[in-house]
Length: 534
Image (cartoon, rainbow, N blue to C red; front, side, top):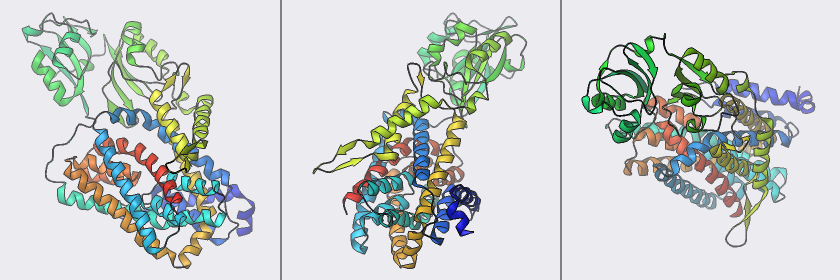
């Protein structure tokens, strides 16, 4: 059997991926390894023989796919939060990760760990596979042999489990201490409601919807209106009259503000009558539409329809004129049946098209990332470092994801395709580095190095977690958001899932999306600095 696996790399790859994925589904309480189990199964196979390893191309190809797709999806949110509350969260991430790097250096000196082991310990205790990849690439660039390149993976694999469990325990402790004190929560992504309001206030008569919205700073969308028994679309220039019934979509508290200004809420829903106006969910699949704002598309003027909601992935939010549509968005349009048909053709509404990737723009984006990653960046003192296969595509993906479109080139890829490529890339990467480093990992454990690495990893993980939670609590960051920041700092979806389940809130997503990109980039940079220090 071993001989067959040595001669058939594809068979080895799919065995490691399949078995690893099954192992990752095993749950102990609320904890499971998830896709990270592929790494440990790969280490197990690799430990059987030094020749039982996948080609280097497998893990490099997987790494580029994984990092670039994450960056494309995170780009818009990353830059949008920098000027808001995000600076506070990212300053916390910067401070904690710098502290963790210094702690790794101190612990490494204390217990006598080599620079490659320190780098792997840093990446494993903070559960970041791109940082591990950056360490491997840096070692390879310095001419290190395979034995030296296997050391970071061995340290990573030993420290990784406690890197997950330690974060879960730390947040559980914080939630037990502070989670029931009723702190004021920050604004996340509120659930949307639809209400029918009747205009009974004489003060609003004769004013346009645009004038009222600006005066009161309402954050709602007006869809349809019933006047004299006939329904019609509401536009910015629509003037309200007594007795009008208008459909309003927004957060419940915001809709209540509108109702107080216009008149009263009535139980009848205009949506229940679909004779004059209809509504429909439409997929955005047209590459001519994606990457453009609703103001640019001018849907009310061109087709006589209004977009009242946008669903992106698992999140539904209220559109504005500045909302940029992305491939895979599901928009709710209101209008006549014929208008909706015309708008649907314009938007694309093709589920099949959402499974396709623009190979030209996708390849060009990755190529730009690889070029950026190959450039030497000078450091104080005369040294240099490179962003490499992990950092280059990450930075490029963040920028291109935020841009969305450059002239005729659409950088976006559909949400579902992004998730598929991301998962594929991560599996290829974990299987590749697992099998290539399994033999050295086994020798590390047998040689007694494993216990020191495990204890050091525990210290680093718990110190980073408790420091994040304590400082965040002192800064009065709401605990649900802080749990998301902790998960983003750790770049660990398992921690995010735990905080979502524990808090019963969607707010951890806000902290996670804000902290994740910077944490990813900082870990890639810091792990290379740790290698320079040894």
